[in-house]
Image (cartoon, rainbow, N blue to C red; front, side, top):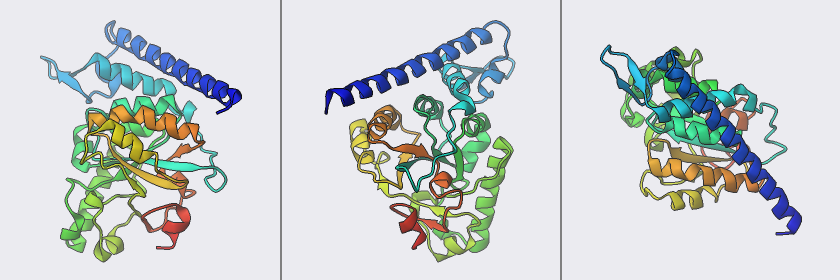
Length: 286
């Protein structure tokens, strides 16, 4: 690496650290506000990672308030909807099985890198934690349908499949105001019945980090770095080892010139019926 390249990389890293400090400061301000009369439930959506007080209201942890406020501080100002993935290197980071107790932390890491991602959420988790999903959508990320209770969709009848996905989409719309435009079948299991009866494009992946199998942050980073342009990476935001890996993934892929977009952005807003591997051209051929 030349001295000029090293200098540019150093400047970029410093800028990202500065952004992180700014976001953290905003979060601390929100924590202070919660202690001086601002409703704690309002600060974090009233449902994520909090403790139930004597009056039955949610009292969020300081960490949850800080992270949520950091995401809000980034807000939609970090959005970059002008990315054309036909002209620049794009990658779609996707997170399954949430929302969960670590989702806010993932959001803060993504905000620091102006990264957009797609979260394939489980319907019953959305119903239990709508505020997390609301924050995720407000930060500019895409919310995808991952079934109601993580059942293997190939075991359902056509009617049962449609009912399951519709119930999940309704929960997502209730939380965010917008119905999902993509779905991912649990376990990646789909057949002709799923493909024909899903009202949404079926989105799989090109890189499986296997974070669900190996709870090893370094391994997650290595697997994620194998992605190519137009790739879709599978993560799960329910594992702390995955969350720990995300800043390193973002740093490594940023250094290689990747832009982080949602699945729908990757396909210019029109994903094909099945997004199975590689990039837009490969998926469209399926």
